[in-house]
Image (cartoon, rainbow, N blue to C red; front, side, top):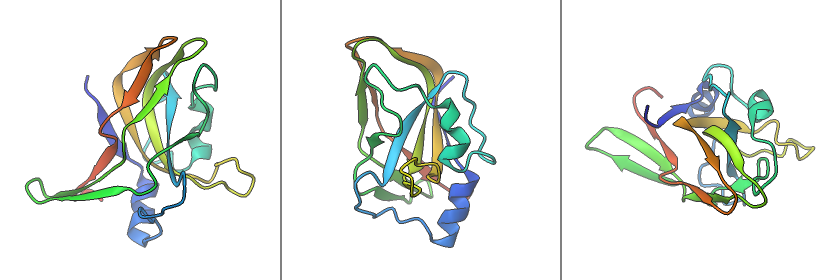
Length: 156
């Protein structure tokens, strides 16, 4: 099974309202998290970090919860050949140290919101990248997400 990318319905709603600023230059405006191997993304019910945080990987061995900030400015591209827009960020890397990271089967991108108490619970779920397989990063090995982003087509 290959990698699949799914946008949350809450993200599509907020995008339509114009409440998402992809050009936000604040550090950590968008973050990516790794999910445990039992996580199954539901685009209708997974709208905020609070909805998914119980399934985020445990902190340790080189992984910190809700801590991997994406590039400050998102990159938009217009694809006239395939009639879509695309949002992307730079590649991100985790390096296992002192033990393994995972297993993980997916990553989720959120638009970070400290929620007043710095919990991030109100952070908007942008979407999920399902790896199509379980991945365990062993001690001393790096895991990199490449081509991190989502396509926006007529479905938005």
